[in-house]
Length: 249
Image (tube, rainbow, N blue to C red; front, side):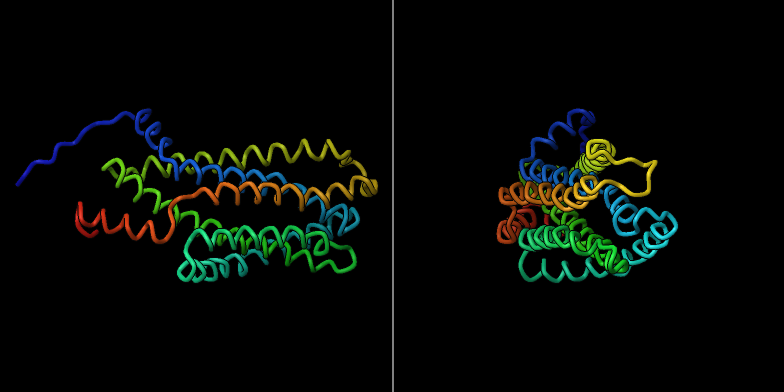
């Protein structure tokens, strides 16, 4: 038996080396753009239900928010197999692009799905956001595995832990930043929590920003995705080179 020599690497060093991986940095840019944009309007979604759709009635708003949460589950689960099939047929980059375009369409549609004339339509807004969110996280996780293969070919080591830690931290950072700015947005548009009926200007800004902010983030994610170098063909080459080096796993 041949003894394997283990080389100790400090956490700081391995994290720094992980961030030198260009495809991983691009993936982090996409994650930040997606998470900040969607997290910023989490509060606006509830406020749109309360102040616009339900006309300031808390009990009605809470009732419909419960149903919106239930709508998230079936449509969220449905997003996983749908975008998995798209990824198998067209590749991960094209399937993620499809997710981002679908997300833009959904947030444009919130202008009509949040309406006091048909209260149950907002369930589709919530459910469809869960649908594209499930597709996004499924594909991003699979692309992360490709990044690790690329990094192993370049550096000769597997660093799943380092990549997972960096990715998890950046995702949580983006969500926290977005959620924090959401409260500043309410103050900026003169939202008054002490009154049931908001001004027409405030209502308009709630509806406009609910669509506009995520769309800006999604467009920035598309710009980053256009620079992502790991195509389906490139990953097939990398897989062959890794198997030639260390055998099949």
